[in-house]
Amino acid sequence: MKMTSRPALVAASAAMALTVALTGCSDTKDTSGSETTAGSSSSNIDAAGLVTSASEASKNVTSAHFELATTGTIPDLPVTTVSGDLQNKPTVAAKGTATVNAGSTVEAKFVFIDGRMYADLTGGKYTDYGRGDSIYDVSALFDPAKGIPNILAKLKDPKPAGSETVDGQKTEKITGTVPASDIAAISGSRVTTEGASTAVGTTVWIQSSGDHQLVKISVIPVKDATLSLTFSKWGEKVTVTKPDVAAPTPAEGGDQKSLDGN
Image (cartoon, rainbow, N blue to C red; front, side, top):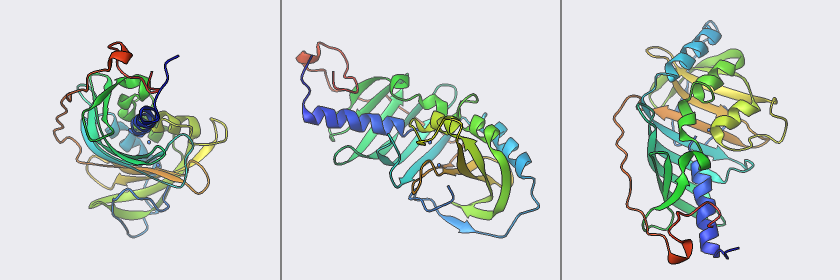
């Protein structure tokens, strides 16, 4: 077996963390950088109907900006923030930055294109970390079968919790629960220490009018931790270009680096 240097292991760990993070959410404090302003109560809204509308709208998202944030410690998810732009149709591509904790804090740039993940963990050239779906399937974010559309469809016992403005968007805040297995499908991690069917507290903020897009989703995956995703800039053009990639070392035999550095 090939010996792997500590820097390579740290880099690989960081890459796994940032790719896991491309996808994943509680109405408690988060660090997403989004601004939320409380508003009046909207107990008379049709919460279930609004959630259904948001689920359908999310199936048609062509592109969006997303911000991922966490607080506390979430199992298997060492990322703390991700800021990215995603093209969802006609093909999935994304670019952005992620802050991960892989022994030390690393601010990493990433590009996902043509089903492969490229990451710049050292401030130099990007490294090809293999097939994107083998690390994390970014296309799952708005995948009708397992992404945001599915999570909204699986939201149980939705209840209105007032009107709020999030990043300038007027929204209706709705609370409910979603099975842990469905949350894990977009977070890329084991978000609960309980079983897959465990009900995870979930809060969503949905546009009060217009397309009824999902503006924010937040969950409490484990005690004293939160994970949130905030969306904006739907339909805006996203240009993703394959980056220059560092040449593999002779020891790698020309193969692209895997997550364990081998």
